[in-house]
Structure formats: C-alpha cells, structure tokens
Amino acid sequence: KAGVTQTPRYLIKTRGQQVTLSCSPISGHRSVSWYQQTPGQGLQFLFEYFSETQRNKGNFPGRFSGRQFSNSRSEMNVSTLELGDSALYLCASSLASDNSPLHFGNGTRLTVT
Amino acid sequence: EDQVTQSPEALRLQEGESSSLNCSYTVSGLRGLFWYRQDPGKGPEFLFTLYSAGEEKEKERLKATLTKKESFLHITAPKPEDSATYLCAVRPGANSKLTFGKGITLSVRP
Image 1 (cartoon, helix red, strand yellow):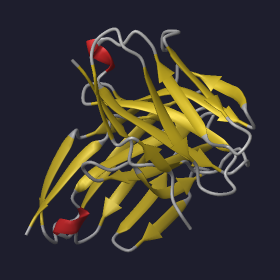
Image 2 (cartoon, one colour):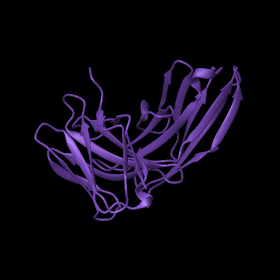
Image 3 (tube, chains in turn brown, green):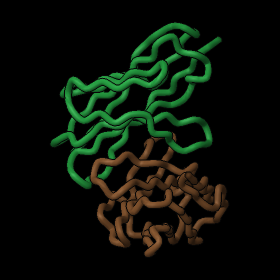
Image 4 (tube, chains in turn cyan, green):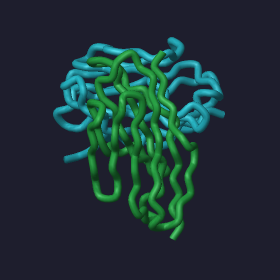
C-alpha cells in the first residue's frame, strides 16, 4: 500500500513569493492534516481537512491556507512568504474514525531567502 | 491550553543500556496518546496508540505505558538502529487535532 506522498520534496523561494504544496493521502484515508516543523517549535498544527471541509485550524496567519479535493488529495498555499516560513511542512492522512493515528509523508522542505 | 512536555531533550545510551523516555501532558480530556519515531529527513512513523491509564503496548525493544498524567517509552537493550527522535502526541477529544511534544533525540552508541 502506497504511503502519503508529498511534492515537491524541496523548494527554494524568495520573500514575498507564494508557494503551493501538494499531498496525496493513503488510499481510503479521508482526513488530511498539515503540520509545520521547525527545530525550535517542533510540530505545529496548521489545519485538518475531512471530506473537503476544514475541520480544525491552528494558530497561523491567514497567509496559510489549504484545501482538499473530492479524491482526498490536498494542497496548502502560503502567500507573501517570510523568512520565518522556512520549515519542513508535513502532511498526514488518517482514516475517518476519530481516533485513528496519523500517517505522515516525508515532507516538503521549504527555504525562503 | 493543551500541553505536551517530553524529557529529556536528548539522550545518549550505550548499546544494550536500557532507559525510558518521558511524555507528560496537560489536557482537558484524553482521547488517545500517540508515540512516533522520526528519522532525519523523514516524516514521523507511527509506533503506538494508548487510550487509557494502565494500558501498555509493545513492539520489539519498545514498550509504551500510560498513566493519568504521563506516558513512558521504555527501550530495552537498545541498538544503534534505534537512534532517532521520538515524538509523543495527544488528542484531547473526538476529532480534535493532535498536539505534539518537541521530541526526544535518542542516540545509541555501538
């Protein structure tokens, strides 16, 4: 069974640009969550989508947004990039049941210069 | 606010030297506690879910236990391949987000 796939693996952008990251969940998983991971803050929750609806949202500015498609694939977008947005962005999928574990992809490493 | 604290931040062991990693939590309720392992350059890999105090789960050299305020990940006779960052996360309620601790970096010397 294929795992969670995130593309691209690496991105380099300059301040002020925008970026779109993509996530394909495990087949049959309907929930997709996004996390930002930095050395100082650890894993910080961005948002979760279930059946194309945002179910939970973290404490990030409105520059961070996401969406989920009918095939459960998800994208997240960051507009007006700042240096502090440099991080590993992780996507995770889970089954519909409310206490299923998250299964993570290997992330997209974003560097903002 | 839900909080998860892991200690120590880093742990260095000799191969075969057993030890325990701690995860303490303060949440409004506990739907589940999760342990993950993360290798450099990769996403976290799911290890265990614990649901209630007194529960234990085992996998190879790892054993996770849960009390009302903390969880322990016991590593018995570790090997160098057990070197990784171990993350703990809690889900306070139904359909709520997972809140992660900052992780414990384990290094096992041969």
